[in-house]
Length: 427
Image 1 (spheres, rainbow, N blue to C red):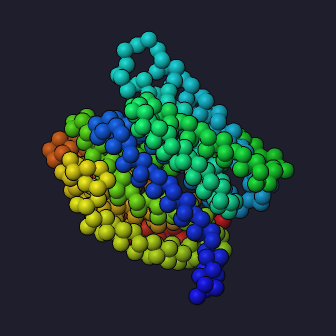
Image 2: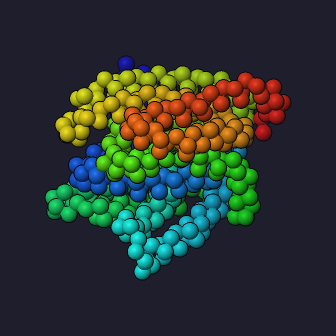
Image 3: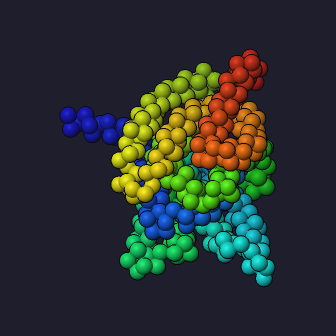
C-alpha cells in the first residue's frame, strides 16, 4: 500500500505541487478576507475591495497582453530562446509600469481637492506593480516546470502578510493605510525572492530576442484579448460599482464576503489556468484539434465534478460558516453566498471553451461574447441594483454569464466547418 501511494505521489508530483500552490494562494486569500473584515469592519473592507478592483482591472490587462499569450507562445521555444523571450517580456513590463504608474502617482499628489480614497493611490500603484511582476515570475516558473519556486514565493508572501496583520491586531493599529503597507512589503519581498530564484534556476539566454519583436508578437496575439479583458472586467465588476454607488461600501463588503467563501473554487480555477493552457497547446501541436478537444473534455469532466461538489457543500454549509467566520451580524447576507454558488457553475462552464479558442489562436469569439456580457452590464447594472438591491446584482451577474455561454454554443455550431478548415493542422 505504501509503495503504491509513493508511486502515485511520484507520478503526479507536478500536479500536486501546482495544486498545493493554489491551495496556498486561494487559502491565503480566503483567510485574508476574513481577517480584514474582522480588523477593518465591513464598511472599510468594502472601501478596500473597491480599491482592489483597480488592481484587478490592471491585472486583467496584464493577463491578456503578457501571461496568457506567454503560456501558449513559450511552449515551442528551446531553453535559451525561452530565457531571452522571458527577459524581453520583463523589460516590457518594467518600462510599461514605470511609464504608467509614475504619472498616476504624480497626479494623485497634486494640490487639488480629491476624494479621501485618492490618498491610497500611491500604495495601490506600487502594490499593483509588485503583484503583476510576481504573477509573471510565477507563470514563467510554471512554464519551465520549476514548480517549487512559485510555491516558495507564495508561502513567503502570505507568511509576511499574516505576520504583519497579527502585529497590527496586537498593537491596535489596524487601519487601511497600515494594511496596505503590509501588503506592499509582502509583495515586494516575494518579487525579490522570485528574481533570486530565477537567476539561480534558469538557463541563461544565449540568443538575442528583440524586445520590440516580442511586443509585436504579443500585440498580434492579444489584440482581441485586450478588449475582451476590459469587457470581462465590466461584465463582472461593473455591478459592484453600481452597488457601491447605490447601496454603499457595506454592500460591496457583503458581496466580497460571499465571493470569498465561494472563492475556494479558485483553487481549481487557478490550477486550471496554470496547467490546462500549456497542456492544451501541447496536445494541439501533437494531435491537432481532435487531440485538443479530447483533452479539454477529459480535463473538464474531471474538474467539473469536483467544482460541483465544492459548490453544493458550500451552499449547504453557509448557515454555519458565516457566523463562525465573520459573525452572526452577517447572517443576513447568506443569500448572496447561495447566489454566487449558482453563478460559479456558469463561470466554470466557460473555461474549457475559452481554452479551446485561445489554443487555436482564435480569440475573436471570446471578445464578441464579452461584448454581450459587458454591454449587458453597462446597460442593466444600475437599474437592476436600484430595483432589486443585491438580488438584482446576483441576477445580473448570472444573466451575463449565460449570455456568453449561449453565444459560444451558437458560434461553434454555425462556424465549425470554417474553424476546422483554418486550424485542422497544428501550428
